[in-house]
Image (cartoon, rainbow, N blue to C red):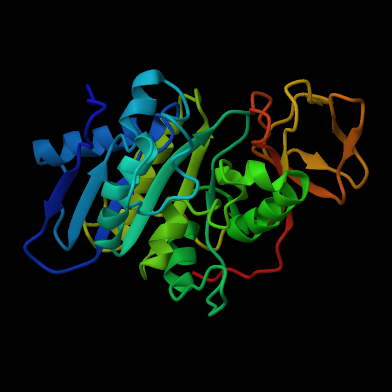
Length: 328
């Protein structure tokens, strides 16, 4: 299916009975196509009558960044999933998408955002913080959000995205000159805000589902089942299309606590890392271009290692076990 770069193809289905308003997005990053394939499969079943929305409304956006998708690359002009907010004077492709996408998100109650990642590793879900009234990411709907995450299928759930980014922004500010900061989105206080974080600011709740490595042949199936499980849990389709994951199965909950940037093109990993590889305190993770070693400050897991990261962009993340208890 073709997706013209100058517009967003948005599919909407409204039942004749009231219910939740769900939006599902794919290809926020153009090289992450498992969500697109999963959404297209659901669309085909809706069009054929094999599947029907019986309550509420469903919005499907198979390709959220058509320019990046047409290039087969992560970004069009920049990363759409950072500093996502409406812009009065859009300067690039992603600003223009944000001016369409942000109001669209605000019209919904729930967002399922489908992604994949570069390095090896299995699928996992990302959730927001517990309910709070703080300044960084106030949340009111953590309970249904975590209930959804527990039923999507992956055995790992990760939290701590925006708080980790706040630390990353401070680190970038410390190593950049004031004159450089005006042109660096990565030093903006809102840099960590993407689709799910923006959705929470509108009063809704959201899950980022990382469906596996970009080329994993099971990725589209993970995405497809996640859409059906979300629709089933929300009571938007008749039961039986797919079995919900057991919320009482063994789940590993991790807390992101640090993001490390690549500072130079010659920064190198010490080995080929996959997401959720274990690291021990003091273990060598990589070496800077000048020979400075980069060690793990504590034990835990490495997440999203990216050996193709551009200088100044995220090289890898670190996570450790969370003490948060998720309840169905």
